[in-house]
Length: 171
Image 1 (cartoon, rainbow, N blue to C red):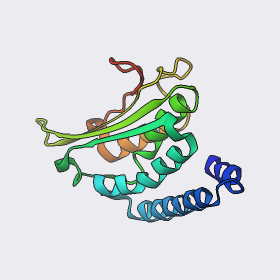
Image 2 (image 1 turned 120 degrees about the vertical axis):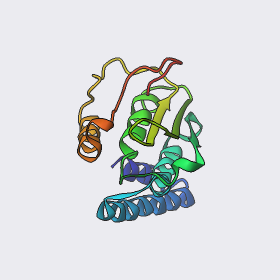
Image 3 (image 1 turned 180 degrees about the horizontal axis):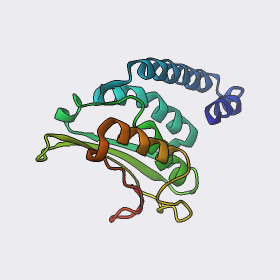
């Protein structure tokens, strides 16, 4: 709905921008439907899916939002449940950029790490703003849903942490 409102707000001032955002929204919706049908895909496919979302958010917030992706090449082949990254990325933007007036950086880091049980994929979403004080560590809807999806897919091998980051901001 925010994206539709964004399109509505710019369509008379910048038709080309409104058209770009509309195309990005259509791409995002199409890819989300395809991903939902697949159920699982590679991290590389998940990154392709979140790209239109990040572009829409950058159109919405302009220079206030910087996005950094730090993806280890060997992590791109890892399989994961589809639509896993939208929730943490949306939370990082919603509770940082949308709440503040300062510029913010949202970063996504992916690393494949060896463990006694086999390789694991470590994903970290971080925002540079102030850690949200009013949110519980459980979140409201998105984080509990994500936690339940991870539990169903991986059991006790999965973990989801949310809170203040040591270097500031939240993760």
